[in-house]
Length: 186
Image (cartoon, rainbow, N blue to C red):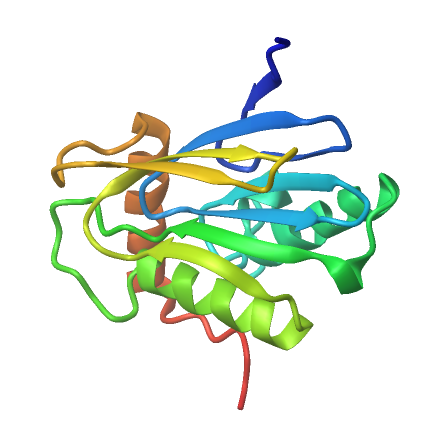
């Protein structure tokens, strides 16, 4: 019996493959989208921290932002022979894991609204999700089978990474300073 390759991604990570691989990540308020073209057997995952840049302030890696991370992942799947029209999604994260008051316009809620709207707008079927709540999550996506294993990490203080906690705190400060982000107008 052979072992599948394993890849771990972090904030801003985007990885797609034709080879059966287990892609892993840890999430707090961030979102991980697991996309799969089951016909071409091409799958991948991203890990983003905010829906879009704040006031156009990219500060480095654009794949940290949902709108870019989603297009990058879909593009990687297409480069490997997948077709956008066949892509299916499973999405995870958006947990309120900081010890600050929860807000309807907080980072986790914005991320959840973004990923739902993106998938709806692009016509990508959402096969499974585990979004919101107060738990961090450990996600393992098997690109060979399309199955996801998820473990919720209990307790608000059990944030996935120091980097994610710092990013979320900085995003909350910027949102208070710059105001709410509107991604889609109805």
